[in-house]
Length: 232
Image (cartoon, rainbow, N blue to C red; front, top):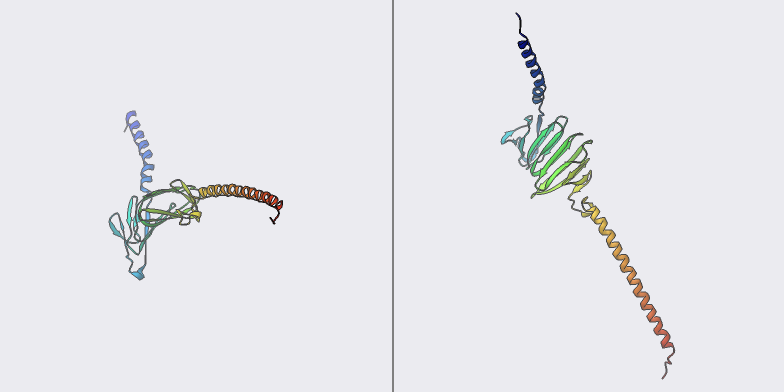
């Protein structure tokens, strides 16, 4: 059976299109999936489930992006993402989570959460007060986000992050309860200290000058009084 040149050309073109599409199909099938682990305090009656996209789920459930996660009181959720990191959502917390290979993002709406981002993983966590983003993706970054009454506090355990453009490094909390430890205020405090020192120097010099002038006047009065007889 003979095939025309047109038929052979059509077959080759179809094969070329098929193999060009195959990598995209495989990539879609390899979409990152997380594994859910429930961590509860059974001694105080913690629940065995959390809410995922409006459905009650238990440990071992696969998690795909996007994922709306809400945890009840006394029950936490841990989402493990292969080669990307781990997200721990504390009890009584709520988050809209998005993720893909080497990327974690989402809207954190309530409670407390911990992000452990492996090296080369980007992240962008939004809170009512701003964004927490990666400063250096070459290292592992671990940080805690605490959200109370729409007030955000970031505690960096390892690596470094940016909160609204302010660098927060390991061991720092922003905003800090102690102003001296606040990374955003350190430079301002240093400038204020220098200004205060200059003021003290100027005041000290002025006081010294005033004292010298007073002593001079006092000495002149003593000379005049020495020429006057104490008996009249």
